[in-house]
Image 1 (cartoon, one colour):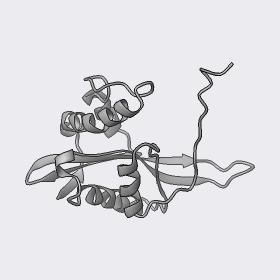
Image 2 (cartoon, rainbow, N blue to C red):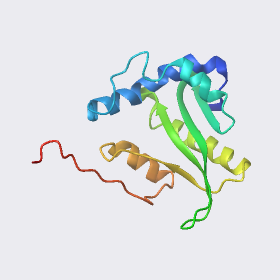
Image 3 (tube, rainbow, N blue to C red):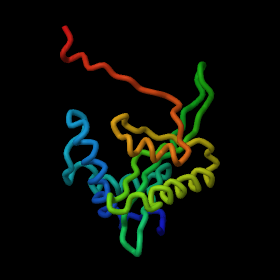
Length: 160
């Protein structure tokens, strides 16, 4: 797989590649995630992301055909009275077309972001993954990611 930094010319492709991951989230949690539409991850928003110096988006292609992308952002947290300053590269999205999964595409995209982090002197990468998404959780574990924090929720809408 060929992996390269995305350009403004890739915005439409990245927007289209997002549909699969958006659909999976919307099906699992329809009260949180909108169904796929031209407005869920529009090319205009992708173009804005591509102009942010703290954001990187890589696009992966097989035989010249785009099959996936990864979107990550440098996050800087200043020192506080309780915590040291913390800089990390946070993966917001990764999507590989379902017909190309389990062929090393996701791994290649992760490795591109690892190299980006190293080039920027960042030693920690983070990401969020929904608990329902066992396939993604398993994939991230195979890439070396481990749980470092957990979020929990309580739906009080049906409680008296």
